[in-house]
Image 1 (tube, rainbow, N blue to C red):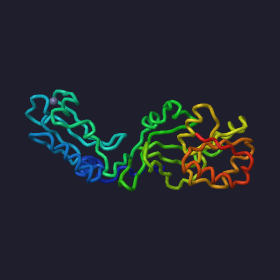
Image 2 (image 1 turned 90 degrees about the horizontal axis):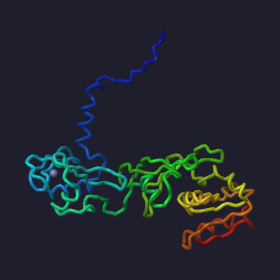
Image 3 (image 1 turned 30 degrees about the vertical axis):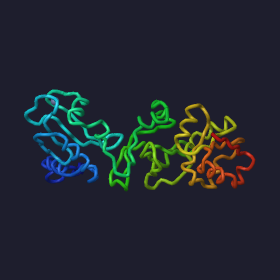
Image 4 (image 1 turned 180 degrees about the vertical axis):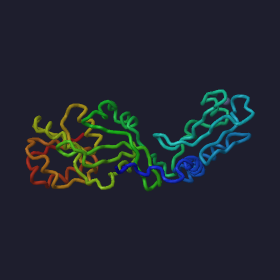
Length: 287
Ligand SMILES: [Zn+2]
């Protein structure tokens, strides 16, 4: 009989784990040179002996307790908000605030950001908080947001990102958009190969039942509308409206276009008005 066991373990596999760890420690774990420099500046604030374990990990003398061999871990880590220096007194568990105070640093000093000040990275928790929407709703079957990561070319690394599935009318996921930042102008990335579609096609039936739909800009306004019980569909960016999308709204008597009183809002309205199939059904709602 033929064996289907594949050669999962290439030669040398058993010994390669340690090598992999060593390689990891000699690299910068995806942090930019600028961030590493910021980390070193923080390290410099701690007097006495430093035991440098890697580019992103060091043990220093704890400035709070009577420390004689470096027992305070000062490590560079990536969290939801971006690169952050993490402190951990392994010997006495000294208070974070006391350690900071002893070396004249603040909490903000430990949050390192790229020079352009743009804080990339967005977690589901941060997104929920910023939109004032419950996590339970955002992760429900209908919305199905997830925590993920997304590569940001400008940084040369992956950042935490909220994965937003785009479904077709039957509920099948056909595209994914990532929210890579809670604020700023650079907030989204499409998954490679995703084609731009309207957000929330799987909920169109609710609009048919209701006899109306809210047409909003972006996923977050769509989420807010859904949460409040309104049938809604989202245009992923005011520059992205495609004439052929109007067909999706066939048979819905009233289309309330929710626009903000700004250039983006005007733009969305202007792109919808020429759509013949929407004629007579559009109502502008300025918020
Ligand atoms: Zn200590």
